[in-house]
Image (cartoon, helix red, strand yellow):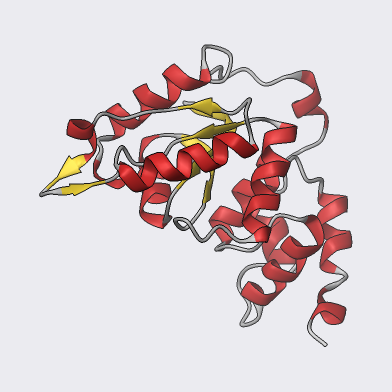
Length: 191
């Protein structure tokens, strides 16, 4: 199952829980301290594919949801109940079962988002592959993380580990040509 919209969550543990539940691009706010870069990435996703706000069902989660909803009023909303998100007294999306996460996101996304069929537009340009990342030095090198950060800065996507970076490239439909051009900036970005 794949969700077309980017899912905005609070932290990395939430992102890991999403990855165990389904295929989607996720963006972590890291709590209340949302950086300008993260807000720019959320805005880019909002304008291109849409976003689903999926925060913890606690006071902090509600406050983050309110802030994001003011900034992105057409965002879809996904919710878990307290009982679905509770484990050992801790409340958070990371505690929910993959089934509960899938159900919440599918309710929010609606029937079209979960379709497995891709559009002709998506099929027109092949997605960037893991081999492309390796060939461009974005994986498998001592400086790969810096190279991803540099390319991500040029593309407005931020960095991330190789799996998360590839997911963002595919979500935002970055072509291999665009990525290659962004990678040419690496030596200039590190000076």
